[in-house]
Image (cartoon, rainbow, N blue to C red; front, side):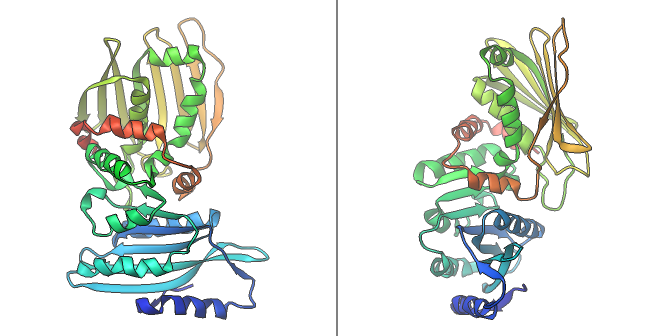
Length: 365
């Protein structure tokens, strides 16, 4: 349904009118959560809206979508309401959608518009699709409201500063935190965890000397920090294995990290590839080589990207290739994952602590 632009004072009345007009149809109102989205008014805002639609298809929720028009000089505040279809069938599941657009000093009015329309007794998830370092006046009010605050590190370029902001946030707030890029590479974390689950395999992983990670560097209007997922994956491995960061070499064709493990050097190299058929930033392959010249290779099938081929070899033998199946990477899937999870991932906190004191990571792009 189209968005009806109305004064903030008439939001509830307009929602009531819409639902009265749908009485007798096969549409049923439902909400499991309050989903509050915040983004700036730009090309990426449409992408975030698409994510909100994908989420309610899994979890019918009341959506409050806030956009900040940073290019508009005068103060303004516009609100609108509609309903979004969550699923179709004999009985269509439909959700409330409230849109708030503002500019300038009108940000001070936005929390007072939001509060009356939060459904009581339902969790409040805030999806903050901008850099927390921007000092938006809405950050603190939404932080106080939320049960789970989900960030998107795609919006940042300095991962060290981002990690510092999130750790300070977690220390001073009881709400849980999450990150869409952390969710985007969950399948790779699960794959490596399931591969190196025995003491023998884990010892081989600890004995690694070279790691190569290929990622999709194809940019779009709404996704340009394409290295972040690959940086997260190598950072997660190093943080969990206790390797010591030494230096970072940033070149156009690759990004090379140098670590120390038991006085031995470990080199991790990130290589870009360009594939229009894959999502920007997608990790394509991971190859590991140990001190004993054992190789562990994991690579996506580019024609079926959710299927990963696994090959393990030593100087004496080569195991039969195996297949590992990722869940299909649908739009909005990372947000759905982070909504499903409870609490704050201890591994994610370890990763943030690993990044926080490394200003070199501002070179991630």
